[in-house]
Amino acid sequence: MSFHISNSAADIAEIEKSRFVDAAGLDIDARDRDLLQRQRELEELDGTTKANWEMIKKLTVCGVAFLNDAYDMFAINIVAMILGFVYFNDATGSAQNTVPKKWDTLIKIAVQVGCLLGQLVMGRLGDKVGRTTVYSASLMIAIITTIASAFSSSMVKGINVFVVLFIWRVLLGFGIGGDYPLTATIVSEYASVHNRGKLMAAVFSCQGFGNVLAPIVGIVVTACFKSSIDTDVLNLDYVWRIIIGIGCIPGVATLYWRLTMEDSKRFQLETAKAAAASADEEMLREKLLAKQQYAEGRGIEASAATSAEYSAPAANRTVPVVRRAKTFMQYFSEWRHLKVLLGTSIAWFALDVAFYGINLNSSIVIDAIGFAGDIVHDKPSHFIIRNCLGSIIINLLGSVPGYWIAVFTIEKIGRIRIQLMGFAALTVLYIVLGFAYHQILDRSVAGFIVLFTLAQLFQNFGPNVTTFVIPGEVFPTRFRSTAHGISAAMGKLGAIVAQGGFMQLKDRGGKNAFINRLLQIFALFMLVGLLVTFWIPESKGKTLEEICDESEEYY
Image 1 (cartoon, helix red, strand yellow):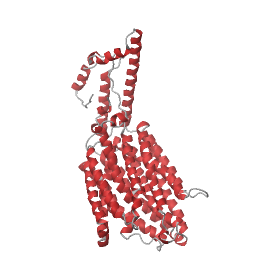
Image 2: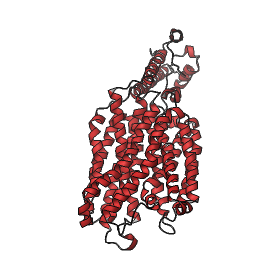
Image 3: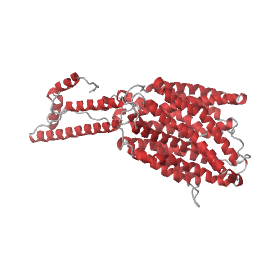
Image 4: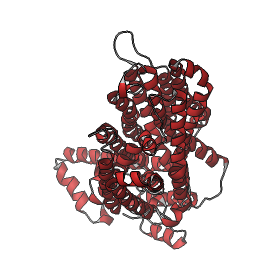
């Protein structure tokens, strides 16, 4: 059964003409008209472009959420560097002031593991319990675990500070993970069709500010302790704890607004529609049970009676024809729907292998361009501040501009074109950087910086933004948060594969000697992302109901 939106009296008259009432007194076409009314309300919602306080509040909360998430995720680069000075300053040779690879990997991969779990669990709960309820819970988890992370320490007997920090950051990641599917669904369901992509991209692009804020805080806090650090390097123990602890401030500042947010009208209407379909199905079940009992009382075979009801012409049936809502498994068991979920998931996975492989190890790039300094002979405060400055420069050159170019072009160019363009550009750039890595660095550091900056630009003016936006639009309201969570979790799986797998090979053959091979591997993943993008429909200029024909949600 399909439904269309119309305001004409002829359409209503046609519905009146075909009306019939079943034996249970259930008006079938009244439900159709009820759905028509709901669709009109959604059409009015999609046509709304006027900004109001509720919109400003939601966008502020969601934007701060991603700024906070990015800060918490990428501040670990600075923290790991400081932990080397605190816990390994008495090591010898190249191991001095450097966190061993196994502990460095453990603390950097922790948030990604937690995010993967949080995206799956919180995404599903967002559809079942409600968007804003779960959204508030995820923030409270993040605040508590951020504070706990800042107080991590070694036990007198047992696990060391790195294991304790890993545990708390996994739990922190669980809270952060909920922000991805819930922020996307909240913004997409609240925004109008004309600015939905722009608003979703703008909220996500606040990640760029979080990426820059982390090294800025690192510089400020380190500068405040500079004299004491130069006197006793162990005073850096205060610095890394303060850097982590500051990560809870944006969340605390917006907690009240999160707690007072309401679910979108679209989600409320969808919840009511699903409840009505369930009520209809329950009524049908009760009616069939009564007919079976009546048939058994008259000695008639129950199955034959029921079969006769369904085989009768539609106009003569007394058994009501109800819309049954498809389950998640029923909906995605159809290839035309499954391929979209696979497309969004694999594309995000492919992107994050390279995105987190590079961004969680930005010190490698900073060192490659000669900006890092000497970790053994430089003063710790000087070394840390210099690396933080290098991180700021890298982000401001390509990452932050890329985010906002995407924001201002996504409604003009379209999501799919931006994603295809980004993956194509990244494939070429990683091939060039991978196969000519040493030659470029030897001949021109400036040339390497230009190419790396372009790669950062096309990550964000490309699939890093669109892999977040698209899953918030191309799935039905009843499954949107769950499906977005699955797609995002696949991205975090890519981050885990990059950090826990590929980046363990970077020193194969010498310090950072395998980086060129890793860039070649990243190019292959970009090509995979390019190919699976063709499975995803374009959502520009369409309402959420047009993208996902809601008649497909029922059988």
